[in-house]
Length: 500
Image (tube, rainbow, N blue to C red; front, side):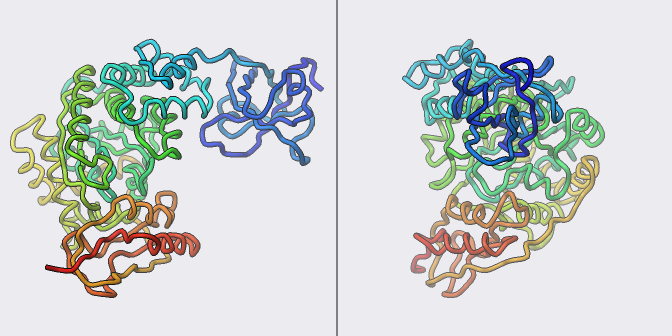
């Protein structure tokens, strides 16, 4: 036993707990017994000049954890920067100051600026457990945050991490609200805007509840996990980038909240606005275009919901000093043919390369978004976007961006492909975005880069019995079968009705 009665020898558990620090201690551990620690207790661990707060998991048997030893999850081990055999002092942490503010919000109270800053500070310092964060996310779900709370939360999130200053001149950016499978316009838009000579340092997220995020799709073609120094080098060389924002410490609390939102599978309007605009502000963006698909199975389903979200976005952008434009778009069905990282990357490349097989809807949507973004800083934006795309300058710029980020790679293909055919003849009158996205996720997307769904039929098409509606692409037989079983259960993702 170590000299201090509250000290334990440390070892790596070699368990990935996805950014949540976890400590494993035996149930007969003298510290557990003397301090009354139980499963899910919050534990402070201090080594030299570093300390973390971790969640306790109690080991009830087995020989893998020696006596008088604590094992740390990957996240805890990396945060403390220790080596096997180091000794850590274990104690009860001070209760997080923000838990009372979260409790107030749970019971219908409001969050002022001080409360938001305390919650975000405790989140970043990992003083809040996953249960605390889940309570906070749930208490803000739907429309439970008002405009003032949203502004306060956005400012707190922006100020809690790094902020990039690009100097003089407009810095352009875009974001899609989401909920529309295959809507991968960002790489095309960035290439067009950078080719026009404007600065567009695009930071993107990985998938939260979708089969692919922009970072997932871009990573199929080029490295995206750049630090801020590398990002500045890329933007300085080619005028734009498409990188994963998770490695840049921009609004770091957002990534922690997203980790909680993902399994809950719901969004808060206020937290969504804070997430979007805090990262845009931290990235130094001055002119922002928000693409907002509206449709019965998109994230924004009605014009009334769109208006409420637009009002919230504009109010927060004004508080941040940003120039904001909203582009409403059709969210009734998926965009392009591919759904999943590699399949969406192939669509992007087809548009940039002006291939005859390029999805027309993805091309036109990208031109609309790029044109609307360019309109914020120059006249005739869409005409300019069209010239840059059709003249090949956008493709050249995209390849230059890929080269600057570490080199271009052609997307791969899944080894297992199986079509799903129409079981009746008629006209396709609806496509369920959420159901088709789930099929792609069950096939392995976005974790398995070549998995997903490839569409063969579109809204309004007329199909015959046995004609392929879509293909499921998978990297394993089990995931292929899982996706196909779901596709065959319940209502079809494609509604086919008698042709008029």
